[in-house]
Image (cartoon, rainbow, N blue to C red; front, side, top):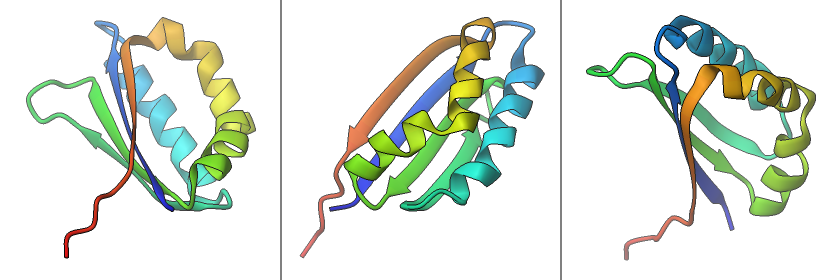
Amino acid sequence: MALTIVAELTAHPGKEDALREALKAIIPPTLAEPGCIQYDMHEDNDRPGHFVFYETWENREIWDTSHNVAPHILAFHKDRDALVAHFALYELTRIPVG
């Protein structure tokens, strides 16, 4: 069953541009990962520096054992504390209607 991830990240004040660029850099390699169906980055129109990722993966196992240990994700995590003031992650399952 597909897994949906919603991740929210808010930049430290003054780090909005740096975080935006760091996040944009992980998109192409993530889209090339096996099992990645969708990986969309959004920025809040009223709060620059507040980013939301909407992701769809074939299943949780692929997300956990492939994406979370991918070199580009591990590299981002090294800088994350310096850039990110708030981080929240939600693992969701789509509920079909009908």
